[in-house]
Length: 372
Ligand SMILES: CC(=O)SCCNC(=O)CCNC(=O)[C@H](O)C(C)(C)COP(=O)(O)OP(=O)(O)OC[C@H]1O[C@@H](n2cnc3c(N)ncnc32)[C@H](O)[C@@H]1OP(=O)(O)O
Ligand SMILES: O=C([O-])CC(=O)C(=O)O
Figure 1: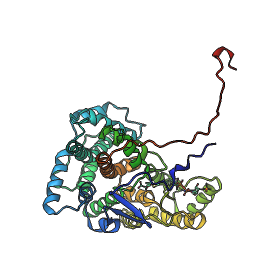
Figure 2: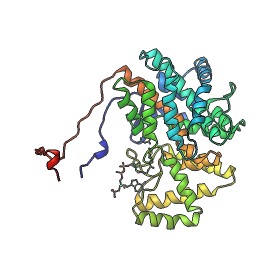
Figure 3: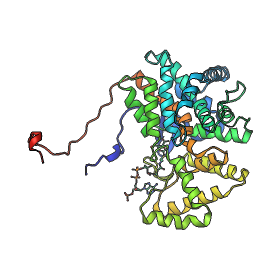
Figure 4: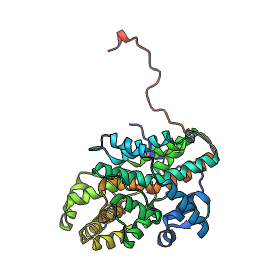
C-alpha cells in the first residue's frame, strides 16, 4: 500500500497570515488569547485582510460595508427552496450555494486586487445569512434579514433564531468566531490556495475549501462530537464507551491534532465557554461528560482536545442545531481562507507537487479481445 504521508511537517509555502510556533497561535503576530479576550470578530477579519487592527473609524466603515453586503439576493433563497432540503447535509448546501452566488456576481471572474477584495467582503458578509437562512427554510420558516444595529456575531444568532440574542450569547459566539478564523495551512486553507493558484476565481476557491472542511477529520468533527456525547448520554457511561472505542480502534472525535501535540491553544477558551453556557442552559452534563472524556483520553491515549471538542457542547447550549456546527465553522474560517486567497494571488505560482510512483512498471499492452 503506497504511503501518502499526509505531507506531515512539509513547509509548502510562506504566509504572513497566521502562525503556530511552539504551540502558540497568532494572527498577523497577535496572540489568539488577546484577540479572543479583547477583540470583536469584525476587527479580526479586518486584521487578517489588512495587516493591522482597525482604528475606530476604520472599524465603523468596515462594519457598515459588511452589513450592506449581508443581504442575500432573493433569487438565491428561491434556489435554496428548490433544493432537496431534507436529508442533505448543510455543508453540501453551503458548498452549492457559494457556487451559485458566483453566478450572481458580475465580477466573479474579474481578477484585479480590488475586485477580489470586493468579492471577499461579499462572501464574508453573505455566509452567515446563507447558513441562518437555509436552516430556517429547511424548518419551514422564512429567512430573517440582518439588522443594521447588530454586530456580526449578534446578527448571525438573530438571523438564525429571529430574536435578539443576549449579551452572554453574543460574547460567546463572537469569541468562537475569532478562535476559528484562521489556522495556518490546515487542509481547507491549503485546498483553497491550491485551487486559486491555478488562477481560478475566489468563488471556486471558497467552494473547494468548504468541501475540504466538511470532512470528519477536519471541520466535520464538531458535529460528530455532539453525536458522540448524545450517544453516550450520561457521565457514568463515558468510561465504558471509551473502553469499547479504544478496543475497536475507533477515532475519538475532537481529539488529536496534526500540529499540536501538547494541546490546542483554542481549546481552553472553548472549554470555559462550554462550562459557562452548559450551566446557564441548565444542562451541565454536556460539560461534565466532556471533561471526563478529556481526562480519560489524555491519560489513556495521550491525545488532547482540539478546537472541535468543546465547541460542540458550547454551540449545543446556544440552541444551535448540530448539523450546522460545521457551516458555522465556515462562517468564521471564510475570513482566513479569503486572507490566504488574496495572499496567494498577490504572489502566485501554480502549486503542483510530485508523487513518487510505486505502481507496476513495464507492462505489456494486451489487445482487449485477449484480456482475461
Ligand atoms: C479543525 C480541525 O481540523 S481539528 C481536527 C478535527 N478532527 C478530529 O477531531 C478527528 C479525530 N482526530 C483525528 O482523526 C486525528 O487526530 C487528526 C486527523 C486530527 C490528526 O491526524 P494525524 O496527524 O494523522 O494523527 P497522528 O499521526 O497524530 O496520530 C497518531 C496516532 O494517534 C491516533 N489518533 C489520533 N487521533 C486520534 C483520535 N482522535 N482518536 C483515537 N486515536 C487517534 C492515530 O490513529 C495514530 O495511531 P497509530 O499510531 O496507532 O496509528
Ligand atoms: O490546522 C489543522 O490541521 C486543523 C485545525 O485545527 C484548523 O483548521 O483549525
